[in-house]
Structures are given as structure tokens and as C-alpha cells.
Length: 312
Image (cartoon, rainbow, N blue to C red; front, top):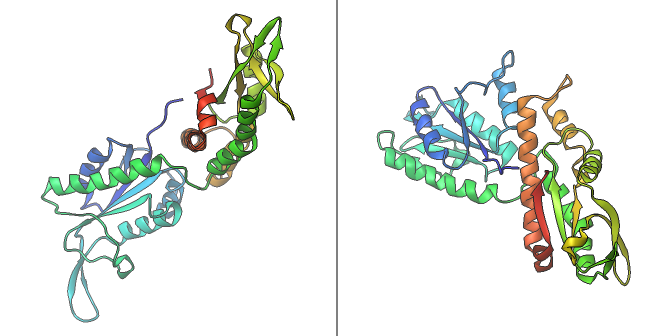
């Protein structure tokens, strides 16, 4: 499975759209960027507000361009330059859904923001200075690179599932591998064990059934690692010509149900899989993989014997 780039939504006012296009060009180096005018972003026969609520479930990051759009007369008689209200509203929606590490506001110099943003650093740019826009975008790129590699709790449960899978299965299996007795099979002795975790190609159906078909398709057999104190059942690829090396395979059945969770969040009223659902599923599989790798990398024992691979 290819590690997908993060999905980035870029919002702006109509008058700030040219700046947003430059932002898209810059951020395309790190993610798949979607401007608010791009085809497929808005769902037909759906209100603007409902579309915005739908989009925060799809995108990993939101970047909003606040340009000098409106002149406002304040209560003390001053005239100030402000961004369009809808840009601030959309930024607020993404802040609420994704958090401050995944929602960014790019601000034109000398415009007034709501007082709630007081004291918060946000990159500023000059509309006629492309370098200032690029410099601001690089600040976002660094944050996106940093936080996309991390596991974040979200509307979907893959972060918690990956941590639970590591704690409940991999940790114990790794200990068993390092304490394992010799395994005898068809006259061969196996003493060196590796664990390969298979990430399924998609989340449709029951993962346990996918796993059973996968093991059968490749001729893997059920056996067990034995230690002094316990017996750890698992699916093995035992090749007597490759002794003493043995490979254990596991497809995490804990992934079952994520597709149902996604459907509930998307509030689908029909059967079948939409393009958005498939993209979200791939994003969550990637998140599961990243979080699991973070857990593995914390343990020298696990790093030595565990590898995450794609379904084949």
C-alpha cells in the first residue's frame, strides 16, 4: 500500500482566490491540495454549511487565506480592513474538527482578525510579494510533515486500534519470539522467527475472513511458538529448505468495523462505497500503519523481528 499524501483543503474568498492558487502550488509538494472551487469538492443538492461539515471528515489539513476584503466601521468610529466572514467561519470549523495542529490561517499584512486570535502567531504575507507567500507556505509544510507522521486521535478509531493491537498482540508475540523453543516441522528445525503484519488492501468485509483466505491462498499453516511458560498460536510459513528461518503472518482482525464507523460518520443512507469513503479508508489504513510503526520503533526487540507489509 502506498503511503498516501495528506489531503489538504484550501479556502479563501473569491477575491483571495489568486493567492489561494499560489498556496496550492506551494503545498502540492507535501499533499494532495484541493481548492474550494475545484471539481468534486462540493456535493450537489447540499447546502454550503452541510458541505463544509462533510469536508472536515475528509481532509487531513485545512489552510485558509485571509485577504483584505472588507472595510468595517468599528463602534469607536474607526475603519478597519478585515477578511471575509466565511473564511473565518471555515477556519473555525476546521479548528473544531481537526485541531490547531492541522488548521492554518495565512493572513495578509495589515488586516484585522477577530480578537479571539490575539496573541496567536500566524504567517503574514504581502499580496504582491510571491516570496512572502512561499515563505509562509514553508512554515505550513514543516508543520504538515511533522504532524502527518504522528498518530492523531480523530473521528475514526485507527489510532487507538493500532496501539491496542500492539499492546494486546505484538508485544506478547515479540516476547514469545525472543524466548521461543525450537520448532520441529517435517524433519526440519526452526529457531529464527520473524513476524510480518499484513495491511489489507481495503476495509470492505470482515478482516478475519480476508485473513483466512489470505493464509489459505499462500499455503500458510497454523502452528504455535512455544516458550517455557506459554504457547502462542499463529499462522506460519515454514519452508524446510529455508530452515532455521520461519515467518509468522498476521492480518489485524481488529480493523474490522472501521468501514462501518466511516459509514456512520458520513451518514450514508444507501449501500455501496463512494469514492470519498474509499479515500477515507485508505487514509485510516495509512494512519493505522504509521501509528503501529511508531509503537514498533519504540522497542529494540520489536524492531528486530517485526515488519509491516502490504497484502499480496
